[in-house]
Length: 515
Image (cartoon, rainbow, N blue to C red):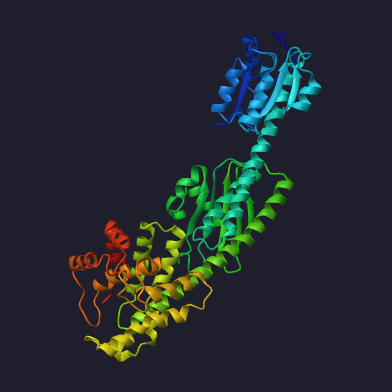
């Protein structure tokens, strides 16, 4: 339909960097086979930033729509206007922008008859990136056009990745009390930094073990987050998995502040005032300009401050967790029982909470609060608390007050874990059928935290030695809990115990009582 495309004789394109395995995808849409052939010849061997061009071909507007629907990562489309209809190309533009909502792809309209689609109207009314007459596109000009379009596409993708990285950082920072928030933050930092520097995806974020209680005592590097080929190392100690040349860079970085710029990689280190160090390591980076270096320094300073704040919050959370355990263990020690009981109850409670469908964050709260279930025993006289034989009726009435005492001790706190501890302390002796204490609550009126901890507590208490009894055999413990299902215990929680029994027994083995 359009006039034949003839390229003028011009010099070859400027030599580029060595080609990588990555490619730029380009779609040529035209109903004339000769146009495809000439375009392929003109762009043969072309590269941009060391990546070669891969051309795909469509011969109608309909075929182009189908192709673009299936492949969203096309960088540039060289699109004919007049094909099966006079406005087939314009229809493709509208489909891409309005139906596929693809604003990243660069669309270059090519026409052999500009009178059918005037340039001014097309540029004004359609979201295209360039409009060329085929007769003006020499080989050199096509090469230049392609580089300009690819550069725009690269920048748009970098901005998009930067946006996603920033959203991840903000999302992690919005709730820094989540257990894995530092890891989420770390991954967001990687995405943002690699986007800012137009790097590849191979990057890893490490943290040097310092004096924080959350870190190993030997000062090893622990991998927090990773992308690209480093992803396999997440969760492992760096010196057990990272290649030796990378480890050498990291060990140097761990001893200094700031960044190292090496031939093909960047290593950034920022130290906290408490002695720990966080390290960013990236490979495949481009040559950095002075502007890049200034941006990198500013970025590193901001990340360092944010990381330190996150670590402080994690340290506070860990301190709260330790205090809860220590308080629970102190109560158990006073009653001549092992502190491992509260650890087992905590872990078992979390398993049961997850099994009955509580969200992971809430299950974690149950785990952290359940060690406080018997905190009220601190107000029970030793003579009654540690009596080796059976309690008298009056003694048992005193013993029962530990539930209310525990709730009263904790109920004034505004902290989520301690408020949950108040509920658990006050309700873990309530029974499903209403025969429990202190309030005689029944069924779902008993808070789910209390129902969960009741099963975990009784299971572990029956299977453990106490001052007034020897540990029950496992079969007897399970038979008792099964027999009291729907009487003492919530049937759903009992079922969860039996469903996760293997995991519960593993917890009991891990936290065995010491002699």
